[in-house]
Length: 391
Image 1 (cartoon, helix red, strand yellow):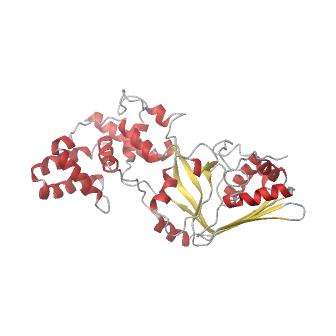
Image 2 (cartoon, helix red, strand yellow; image 1 turned 90 degrees about the vertical axis):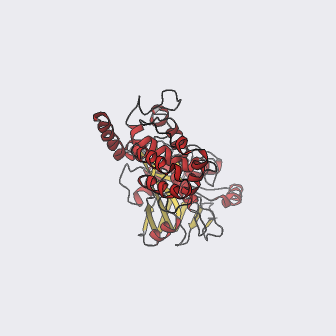
Image 3 (cartoon, rainbow, N blue to C red; image 1 turned 135 degrees about the horizontal axis):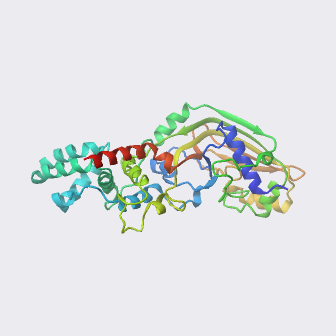
C-alpha cells in the first residue's frame, strides 16, 4: 500500500520530468500555489526569492517563516570587518548623514556603488558644501573595498525606517514574459509507480508538505486513503516560465564571495557569534538560495484516486476543499482560479484545478547552493585578495 509520501514523491518526479527538467535538477515544488492576480505587489512576488529554501523537495510556503535572504545577509554583513577604516558618518556628521540617506532613498533608479561619490558631491555641494569634498573622498575609498562598500549600501535599507529589499524584475515584467512563454502538458497513469527520489538533489529529503487539502496532515485518514490506491494525473499549462530576478542594489556579491572564500580570519570579526559555519556550514542559515522561480498560468489539473471513500470521509473532504486540494492547493477567489472535487458511485475521488491564462502561479523555485550562487564572486574575491597582498 502506498503512503502519501510515496504519492508526493511520485508527483514531484512526474512534475519535474513533465516540465522537462533533467534528472537531478535542483527543482523545489512550492505549496500552496497561490494565484498572483493583478494588484499583486512587487514585494509579494519577491518574497519567494527572499525565502531561503529548506533542504527538501517541497517548500511549504505558508510555513516558511524562518530564514530570509535579506535579514540573513544583514546579519552576515554586521559580522564582517572591512580592510579599510573610513569614518564617513563621522566625517560628514550625523545630521548630514541622515539627510544623505533620505536623499539617496528618493532616487530612482537607486545609484550604483560606483556612482555614490559623485552623487554625494553633487548633492552636498548645494546643501552642505563644507563636507562635499571629504564625504566624496571617503566614499571613493569605501566603494573600492567590498565589505565597506556592502555595509554602506546596506545602511540605506536598514536605517530607520527600514526599506524593504528589492529584486531587479517585478510583477509587470513577470506578466510580460509569461504572456510569451511556451505551453507544456503531461499525463501520468499511476503517479506512485515512480516514487523513487533517491537520486534527486536532496537524495530523497522531502518534508513539510500538506495532506489531501491545504494545511492538512499527510498522515490523516483521508490523506492515507487517497494515496492507498493508484492516482492518475493529467496536467496542462498554457504558459510556463523560468523567471530570474536578481537581488537589487542592497546586495553585494563581492562581499558575500569574500566571506564565503575565507572560513577563518579576515574578513570575519573574531568577536562575533556569526561565523562561516553558522552562515555557510552544514547547519548554516545561508547554505542555498532561490536562483529562479517556476511560474505558470492557464493551469488545468485533473487527478483521480481509485481509493474508495466513505460518505463520512467524502463530507469531510468537501467541507475542507476550500483550503485547496492536492497537488497544488490552489484556492479560488477573485483571481478566477477554481478547485472542485467529485466522487463517483464507488467513492473514487476526482479533483479538477484550473487557473486563467493571465494569472501567474508560482509552483516552484530552482535552488542554488551557496558555492554555485557565489562562484563568480568567490573568484573575484580571490583576485582582490591577491591584489591587496601585492599592494
